Every structure is written in C-alpha cells, then in structure tokens.
Length: 460
Image 1 (cartoon, rainbow, N blue to C red):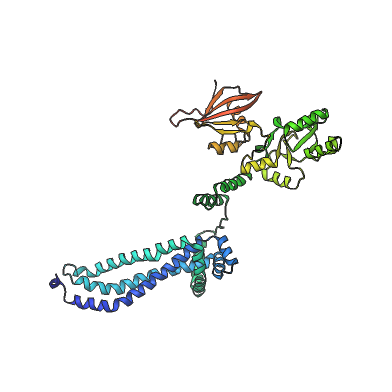
Image 2: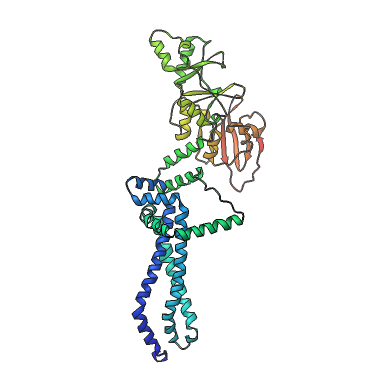
C-alpha cells in the first residue's frame, strides 16, 4: 500500500505536522467566538427580568448591564447576528483555503483519488467544519445559555456591550438599510406585545409542573384571574335563599331568625325584601340585648347595593371601603336578586372554607361512577371548569347563569323530577325539584361510541 502512494505524501504529512497546530488554533478561536455570541444571544433572551433585577439590586454590575441591553435589544441583537455571520464566513473561507492545501496532497497519494483530490478535500472539510461549528459553536453554547441564563447573561453583558460600541457604525448602516427596505416594501413596524394573561398562566403551569410553584398556589392564582371575568350574579346567593329580618314581625321571631341563620350580617326589611331598611351586624344586636333591650331600627347600617351584572372585582373594591362586608345585588328594575359577601368571593378563590350556612343547592360532587351531582344554583363557569364541558348554547347571550337555567332552557318548560336530555355527549337528569326550582341535577358523561342527540329532551 505504501509503495502505491505518491512519494510527495510523506513530505506533505511532515509539513502539515509542523504547521497544522497553528491553523487549528485559529479555527478553534473562530468556533469559540461563534460559541460566545450564540450563548450570549440565548442567555439574554431567556433570562428572567425579575431575576436580573434581583441580581442587580445585590450589586451585580453584569446583571445591570444585561438589563440595559434588554431595554434596547436592537443594538446587541444586530451585533450578535453580524458577528455570527462574519465568523461563519471567515471560518468557511479560512478552512477552505488553508486546510484544503493540507488535505489535498494526502488524498493525492492515492492514485485512484488523485484526479479528484481537491473536490474530495473540500467536501471533507465542509462536512467536518460544519459539524464542529454546529456542535461546539451553536448547540452546546445555546444549551449552556438556556440552562443558566441569568448567570451567563450577567457574565457576557459587559463584553457584549463593548463589542456593540465598536461595531456601532456597521450596525447603524445595516439597521438603516433594513428600515429603508421595509419602508419601501410597505411594511410597518409592529408594536411589541406585552405580557398577556395567557403568558402568566403558561408560566404558572410550567412552575407547577417543575415543582417551583405548589399546585394549590397555581389554582388560587388562576382563580383570581377567573374572578376578573366573573359577574356578581355568578357568585351571589340567589334571592330565594336570602335570610333576613322583617321589622313587621315580633322581636322573638327576629331572634329565632338570627339564631338559625348563623350569619354575621343580615338584611332588614318591612314586609318584603324589596322594601329594604338596611343591614344589621348580629354582634350589635346581641350587645343591645345584653344592655337590657333591643331596637333593631337603631342599629341599622346603610346597605351596599350593586348591579348583578357588575364585575366581581368592582364588588371587591366596593366592599374594601365599606364597613359592611356584604352587598345586595339588584337587577335593572331595582329588584333585589341576591346577596353576596366577602366569604363568597374568598370561596371563588380558595374554594369552600367550610363555613356553615352554605346552601346545599350549591353543591358539586363527583361520584364514583364518574357522574356529577350538581346543585341547580351552582355557578355555571365553575361547573364547566369542574366537568370540562365547552361553551353552552345561549350562555354568551346571557339567557341563564346557572346549570338549572340551562336545563330549563333546553327543556323549554318548568322541569319535573326525572326529566332527562342529552347534550354534547352528556346526559342531564333532574333528580330533585324544590317547588318550581331545579334543586339537583345528575350529569353523566356518555361513552364516545354512544349516539349524541344535542339538545334532545325527554321525560323519564
């Protein structure tokens, strides 16, 4: 085999052994520079601004510089892209010129390959340098930048800013050229979108998945966001369940009402709820009784009234400045439709905290067979989230606000116990009525293979 080789092969190998280390050093430096800019790019854009601010607050100058770069990303972004492009061009050109001269004589030592030595050398160099550049100049540095972005960003920010200053004239020429071409093509600059609610949900979900955030914390934060989309009527206790004191009734009757209700605040009226007189704090009533007598009219407080269609957060602001942690919801005609307390708002955020006096009409139970037993007055948005059902027909139009309202709309009449209908692969059955009001509903998911009759109704 050695006899078939070109005699110049040994001389070429000896020359390459003497000069190649210097050439490989230059190539390593070029790939290292490419790695630096790739790592800086990913680290800066993956960094949490809050964590960088925390590091800067502790005196980390690199973190403060990273924040400055993030406030004006165009400069350093252009610098990085220009640098990576130039380094890539220089690496390819240098390797093609220098290494081909080393490799071609070696391949020429094989008589069968000698006519194609230049092309083969060039192909081998391109594949090898591309692999090394992608691996050591791109993928590995980017992974390092993603794994510890704040630390890397604080380390590379100051050198990168210095490089940006040196490259500023060239960067400005490129930026001006880019803007001119875009303007000529009719493209307009778009405003950068801020952080959306979906972005925050995505971060919370990822934090809960990785264990940084507790599941209960994620659930509460999500509930707070949902609270901003809810109306008062979805949280209130409806009018039929309101317990109040009628001033036309004897005092003993009022005492029995107070003892049986187990509420801290009660509305006071004459004859009917719409002739509202005010609200009493039960503690004031018992203080009067201890002093030797009771006159409810003397301890009345001004009621807090709010439209039933008002946002729940507006009610929260109203109750925050009110001495009475309870409000009465009214409709467009001024009729009282429900009552809502701070407890109702807290329940929407953290769930039922076990306070007594909660109506069983608002229960939501998952049974062992996979079905759901739901109180007819349970808020519709909570029912949908718990079961996982989509938007119901007529919901957006405001035709109803509870699951009982949906059942009545689908049946087209006052239900009776045993009424059954199917919708969207769910079976709805009225299992209990309280007069004309739907008290309990059994919702059963149907198998995927069963025929769906959306909107069909029937009596058991």
